[in-house]
Length: 210
Image 1: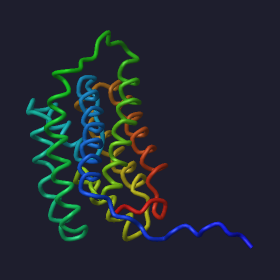
Image 2: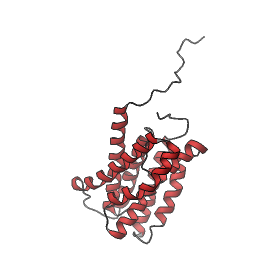
Image 3: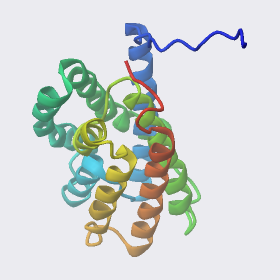
Image 4: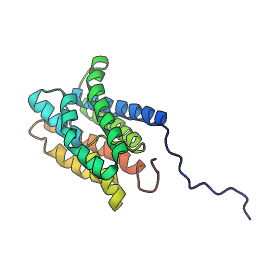
C-alpha cells in the first residue's frame, strides 16, 4: 500500500500582496505589448483593438480611449463576476492605460524594415498573452471581451482563449481600412500568438484562481 500523502484539495487564496504584484506584472506585460504594437502600426483584438481603431482614426491618446471604451462593461462584471473581480479589472485597465503611455518614453523601435511588424506581432502578442494569464489567475481582466470570455468559460465551459480568438480576428479584419495589408497580416499573427498563449495555459479545471 502506498504511503505517499494525498494531494490536498483545499485551495489557498491569493494574499493582497500577491494580487497587487500580479496585477502590476500582468499590466506591465500587456502594456509593453500594446506599446510595441502602437509603434509598429499594428492592431489587436478586444477592447484594445477598438481603442487602437479610434486612436489611429482620431489621434486621441490610446490610454484615454482604452479607459473610456471599457466603462460600459463594468456593469456586466459587477453583476456576473462580483465586486472583487470588477475592482481588480478596473485597476488593471487604469494601469494599462497609464503604462501604455509611459513605455514609448523609454523604449523605441529602431531600424524598422518589412520583417519588423511580424517580429513585433509575435513578441508583443506573446507578452500580452502571458500578461492576460497572470491577470486571469488573480481574478482580473482587461475588461470588455475579456469579461465576456471569462464569464462564458465559467458558466459554459468554453475556453476563454477560443472565444477571444474568434472575436479578435473579426475586429482585426474590420481594421483593413485603417492599416496597410502588411500591418494587417502581422496583426493577425499577433492575435494568434496572444490567444494561443491563453488557450494553452488557461483551461477550465487546470488552475483554480482564488
